[in-house]
Length: 96
Image 1 (cartoon, rainbow, N blue to C red):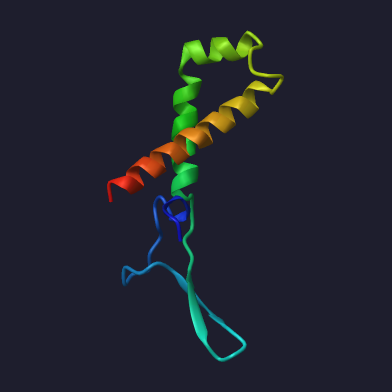
Image 2: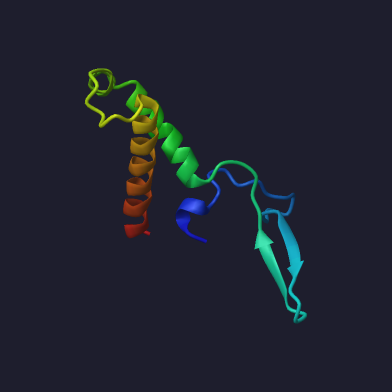
């Protein structure tokens, strides 16, 4: 599982493990898939980036001026938030 797909705030059982479900495969092998409840790191960081973008008066003024290539302002904000989040996760991966 890639870093961006890992949970931002994983929910664990009383034993400290992530919640698990067993999925039996046809040949008799059993594979455990870890499941977490909540946002992924990518979703969490994108939300934080979006908050930052929405507080940037210059960025908002740029969007309102109509220089966003015919996309709605919300689409530009969402795209940039995800791009920033992915860049952050990529950079963090380099330092682990």
